[in-house]
Image (cartoon, rainbow, N blue to C red):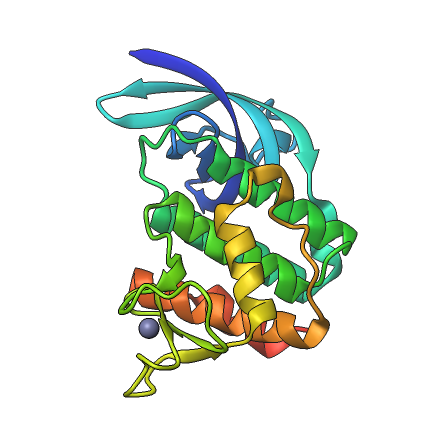
Amino acid sequence: MNTFTTDGLVLSVRHTGESDRIVTVLTRDFGVVRAFAKAACRPKSKLHAGTQTFCFSDFSFSENKETYRVTEAAPKELFYHLNDRLAALTLAQYFGQLACELVFDDDKNPEFLRLVLNSLYFLCTREKSDAWIKAVTELRFCSLSGYAPELNACAKCGKTDADRFFFHPSEGVLCCQDCNHSFVGLPLDSAVLGAMRHIVYSNFEQIYSFPLSAESCKKLSLICEKYILCQTERSYTSLDFYKKCRDG
Ligand SMILES: [Zn+2]
């Protein structure tokens, strides 16, 4: 039997048996880990607090024949303000679904966890709008998982400067107005293109900080959503629910 420790965020919890939990955890060092937490539903269990949904905890796991068990879970941060707003809670669930889709089980890139933790933090503090947080998370998730769009130049003629660019979400490329003959691309104004470039190419510390009007942010959010849906080729129940209950 192998044991290992790491910190991670509980993305979802499923109850099983009389008082057990199966948790899905986005870890810093080992990608997404699905593990059995014996008796964790019992309030007196040492695993109870640290295995709740959206709890960020220090974990110890044991592994036997690719079956994982939580042996310790010490909570460090519980994003309980997510529960204040249905829109925030459904977006957090959406980010969790994206992580399960895009992070491989043995992915060792700690930036996935950092991205989701920062986005949950902003959902709680409301320093940024939900549309803003959603767009940054979607586009940076794509970049981290190998689906970075090419946003420097027109994919057909190589022009880096044009009055108007169009974005093709299925290919993840730009076309300038002269090359976009079939008009299948989504029109991008310079503010939205600037924001997309910022999210994809900046250092992590800067990805949430860029100037953008609320109106342009709505366009950015729509484009980033179209892009991630195209790239992952699936729908997300949490995203559909978010759209029904969002408050701006
Ligand atoms: Zn062109």
